[in-house]
Image (cartoon, rainbow, N blue to C red; front, side, top):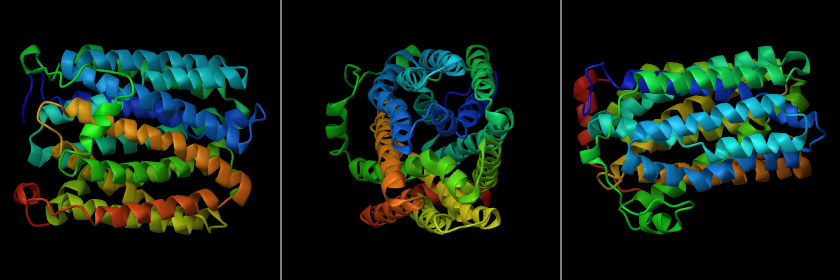
Length: 407
């Protein structure tokens, strides 16, 4: 492992930071659609609200990623987390739909913490260990999504929307303090680079990406993958309310269940899976599992069937996400992980702009299951696109197999 510090593995503090950050984010997921609905927002308007956050993130994330290549990961993480804390505080005080929009725009504009954390991982891991390391961070996502939605559902019962928002602000502040106290810088001054002057909405960077190996094709798959996730996540609370009469509490508990499944996979299973099958095949299997889960979820009429149908969805998302992230870093030019992951997160943000918009319109115009069916078709399309990816060398697969033993 590169860049290890005397304070121990740098993956430990980054795991804790992402974990705590995702608890705060997870609190908001079951809350926000119903919070907006309390101000008489329609599903289409709720889609626009969720898209507003991602629109700001799409513009700002490549800029923050490039800045982290030039100035280091730690200061960018700190700036991003300050914005998150302030946005959650504003969310708690919101007394109108306009203030909800302002809070989400602020959070999106400062939302470079996840891509910068991923770039940090790329700094301190060898290529052969990267999928496993991303799986560890995926486990932090999963644990955060167990505790976050469950806590949000508990605090938001009986329509109390301010309490979850303030709790998210407090948790985000803890993540900020951990970054300041625990996290060593992964890019000392002599290793910092600047491929291009950082800029908001790096169009030139996207054009260049499609000329670098298979990076462009991976970004297409990444876009469809995140578009499907965004459509599912943005309308899940409304879907569960319409189909199963769920409130914030029940929705939070179901999302916590999905997070638990993700932890079980990404906390230990992703290394042996990638070691046996390789990143490309693991990613493609994940796309198919997730598509099957979405198709089944669209048809359920009871909560036991919903839990059953969400299992393949959780499995698919859990194994496809770290594999895709690792493949993206392998195609990245040396020294530009921050910019590449910033571009990928910007692509994901664009998907999260369009996903809620499309899903909200589909929910309004075509009915409750339409967003899930559309998301399943997107994942199937991503699977067929991914079949055009060339076979990667077996270095990563063999190295993982040697380190874990026969899978």
